[in-house]
Image (cartoon, rainbow, N blue to C red):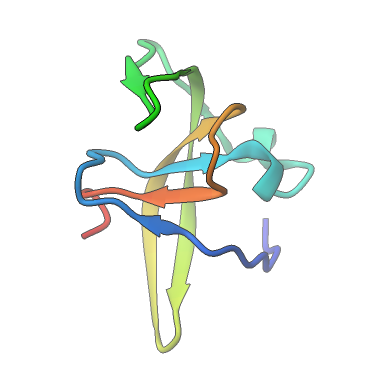
Length: 88
């Protein structure tokens, strides 16, 4: 899967994991995702529970540097992407 998509992520030092909204991902993202055997209990800052059934590894480009990291995939994330302390 080589699709270039751009979004403005939120860098959240209070978030432990990286999360991406599934609408940001390309149409065939599910073919590259891993099914989570145990569902993590994650809540947004507004206390809404996020349901994460999949994880996917993505490249994150920050100008010159390109990093490869794991993201949980959520339907109901209010931001397009959250970079948590795993990314930092």
